[in-house]
Image (cartoon, rainbow, N blue to C red):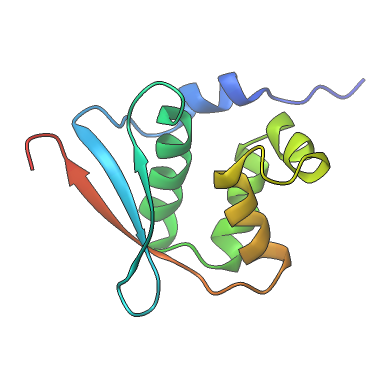
Length: 111
């Protein structure tokens, strides 16, 4: 019997994001593409993207593929419902759609 780890369980294993106000995603020209606020509704995505940036330094294809695995059951839902999970859609575009990678700037609370 195969068991899969849930997104909730994966989140508990990711680096702590206490003290982070937001994560700003930048393109290759340092233009802001998205801002993920560390607040209810997007705090899980902040944890996922922060973990990817800590490990890879940026969001490239390999990082995006790992991110899709971290989102667990939500990745399948995102595939079935484009637009419902924009932070997963972004990773799908990079991992599978050939979209360019992203850099991230961490905004600390009080900045």
